Structure formats: structure tokens, C-alpha cells
Amino acid sequence: MSLNKNFLIFSFVLILLFVAVKSVKDFSELKGAAGTASKKGGLWLLDYRGKIGDPGILWAMEEMNQAYCHNDEISTKVKKSFSDSNFSSAEQAYKRLIDPKETKLIDYEQLSGRERQYDDLLIPALYCDINPLPLQNREKIFNFANSSGYELTHKYLAMLFLKNSKCLKSEVSNALPKAANKIAQEQQNSQPFSDLFAERAALLGFGGYSNLVKPEWIKKIIDHQTEKGGWPYNQASSLENEHTTALSTWALSQYSRTCPF
Image (cartoon, rainbow, N blue to C red; front, side, top):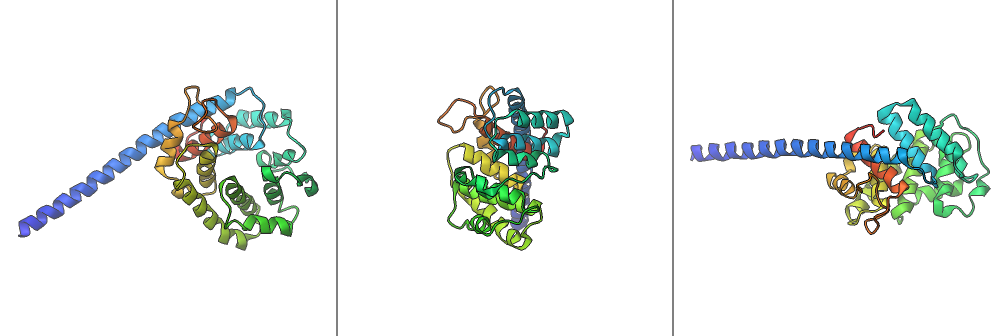
């Protein structure tokens, strides 16, 4: 009886050891694949010659550079691309994302009608240390219980801007983890690859919630990279999209802790 019991215990330990070793190997392989894919994505972004219609693309590139590359040439390229862009006066406010010394405020009345771009959430949050967050914007950001999709990710991102500028510390501390978990749950229930799928993974990692990013999400992102190195807006398309490519590259760069440039 004792021998059988010892044998069972020994077998159980071997199984646990096998699972642990396999998990480490699987993680290492996925991390390596993510790093390789992120570098292909980085090259695609550097070679992109089309019009950049969203300042968030340049911000993602600069964040990756600051976190993993520390390359002054990349920073210079990003800032030049921002200056050469045709961004609107409202979008120009996002220059602060790539140049923290930027303190030029805009009249928030200019944000009227830009709710679809979520500028009314993000820009006031980005400048909260200079201009206190207006009450109506504050209420909108923290009212996310019924939010989903891009609305949810942008309210979460606004909270990250508030946190970075040390604004509304108590409110952000309470709401941010809840918003992150809501994003993760929504992602878990999402099947098709899309720009939003990549955005959720990238922003969770950026916000310090990498523990919520599942390996299967990373694998799905890798699987939808095109031969050219970019990513389509969704899996129904075969044409690379610069916004989706920036987000996908960012998510993979964070997961693998790799410089993509």
C-alpha cells in the first residue's frame, strides 16, 4: 500500500514537473515569435510612406522606442513626422505625448463635435496638470460601467493620462483596475482579430496590466501579420493598416520586451 502511495506521489510530481517545463518552453517560444513579429512590424512602420491620420500611431512608436530602443534617431523621425502631418488644431494637442515639455493648451470648445475621436476625453486628461479637468469630462471618463469597445479603451486611456500627471489620484486608483478588468473580460469574449483586439492588448500592457494579457491573444496577433510585416484592420481585410500595425507591434513589443526598430 505504501509503495503504491509513494509511486502515485512520485508520478504526480513528475507530471507537475513536465507541465512546468512545457509551460516555460511554450512561453519562451511565444516570446521569441512575438519579438520576431514585432521587429517585422517595426520595419513596416519605419518604411510606411502613406499619410498618418492618427497621432496615436506616432505616440505608440515613441513609447516603444523609449521603453526598449532608446534611439534618438527614432525620436527625431517621430517628431518630424508629427510636424509634417496635417493634423487638425485639436490633434496638435497630442504633441505632448511625444514631447512632454509641450504645454500649449487649446480651447476645449474646439473639441465639440470630436466625440467620435474621443478627443473630449483624452485631451483634457492629458493636460489635467495645467488645466483642471472640467467636471463634465470627469464624469464622462469615470462613467464606464456601460461602456464597451473603443469607448471603454479610450476612457481607460484617459485615466492613464490622469495617473501619469498625478491628477484625481483617488478616483483613478479606484477606477483604473476595474476598467482594465472590464477590457480584459471583453477581450476574452472577442473571437475575431481586429484593430480593437490589438488595441486592448497594447493598452493593457502599457497601463501596467500585462498580467491580464493572455498568451492566446498574442498568438492571434502574430497569426494575423501579413507577409509584408503589417496587420490588416480586421481579419476580413488583406490590406495592411498603419493604426492596427502600430498597435499590434506595440502589444508584441511589450510581451517580448523587444525593440522593434
